[in-house]
Length: 468
Image (cartoon, rainbow, N blue to C red; front, side, top):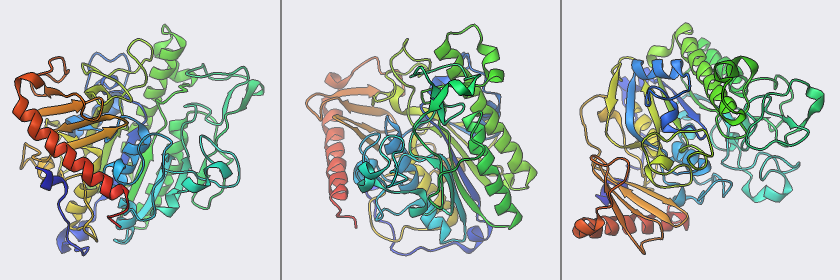
């Protein structure tokens, strides 16, 4: 099985003439801390209104077993761009490491194929300034982690280093505010939040920064998409919303349906509905500019919902664990692909898929191969999208702090302490991970733990720079 993960790809970028002529556009939409159970397309009992995401799921392929590569944001984000597990290049946790120049990213590859590339919203794969204090690590203190979107293959960007409030993103109440607050009616009572939006020139953006943050992000993404369509140029765009990462704040129109909930819930639910509205705006725009039929539109979350059950509003549905956990609730997230003519409307897949699959899938669609032999952890999902295969046959490995897991089509091997103890779950019959069957299947545990350790060793070699 390990050879499926560590397969060596051919040394040249080779294109298929037929597919290359089509050159589908690619958009990666990602939410921040959105739970599997927050979206009605996955959990009909969700109290949150998500009509546009639900419509997207009905129009495309819904992945019932879609995974973020990590239970926190930064590592997952890197996997989307590299096809590799973040322990291969030193982004072990949130606010740790940066995108190294030796890594080959999806926008870098696509730009060489004539694509125009843009990144909008959250970055969280390095600092964005070396001169002024910004966000979690920006400024002189984080100089060693300076790595911007434009250094990693992007032509255009409108990004923050890390989190911002989800309404009026540059400010917070003068009296404080942590997890959530109602939108600030009197701006004179607001103070600077401590972060900036930056463009591809390394300039701090100062205009059009009031109101719903998801809308502000889409306000920048749509002109980019429209301009590319007008020039008849294929595009790649990452649209990475901040919502519903705390601090959650929703505007007056979006809290109305949730007025009877407490401040945390009404603003969490409201900012998800605001985000959903922008997904609808994006889908409508793609149709209006005539590119919807030739666009792979992906949707997911970077990890499970924040906090512990009962302390934060996000919902992991029937799954055990939440953000920062390698149980299913920490890494199983909503996953959707809308791609007319390819992803069958109303279809569903129970095959495990992960954010590391984005890069190999897009390369497969274009008939491309990686330019060197470095290990790629993702696989192409194209046969699954086309309905030609209903199994993955390639395990997915996870590492986060001392937790490690190895996930196959049927089983999940989990250790909370780097192999000092093992848990085994049958995810087909027990997706909620309620029944540890490790003692009943010692041979399975032994075989899977060996594969896991081989993969961990490979990741460590990559992290030591042996792939470069």
